[in-house]
Image (cartoon, rainbow, N blue to C red; front, top):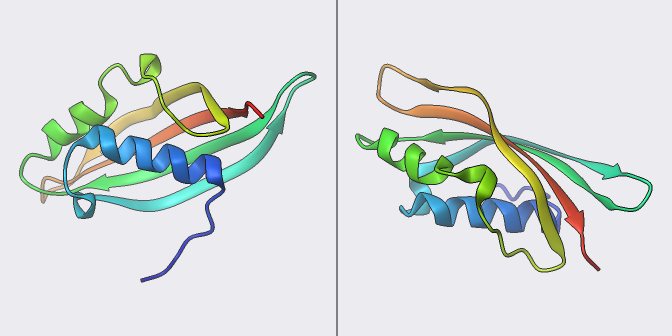
Length: 111
């Protein structure tokens, strides 16, 4: 298994997203991710982009659970606040029923 170098904010956000899916972790595959440093005059944080593939016959239901009211969701990530989160573009469905989607987020350090 290859280990990815995710920042604490990115790793916490990914864990929280997987928990929202409410399925075994092997059903949601992280296919690509990016995290870049971000700052304003008063805040420091990171911008994140997660590309996910959801497999299985009920992929649509899993995608709905993961993305339902996503922008209003509360995430508990120690030392970080999710300031903005959204699904980028329309999710794509493959012939095998799997769904591909990209989620973008901004986390801000609270420490």
